[in-house]
Image (cartoon, rainbow, N blue to C red):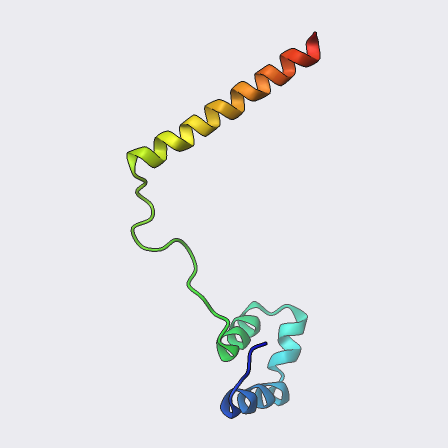
Length: 82
């Protein structure tokens, strides 16, 4: 269970009186984002820097897995036909 200090609790209470929680309950994306920021639940969006470029070994492993899955599907279909 996460424990909060006095300041975040005060900010949450302040937000409840300002209508931020009501707007978040209605589905307002900006209000939800702001509440997550207040509660410390925000995290970076997207991939970490430098993760777009896969190593050649990683690419080969992905291609091999796809080939193996495809071959397994072909074998399974052939078994169903017999």
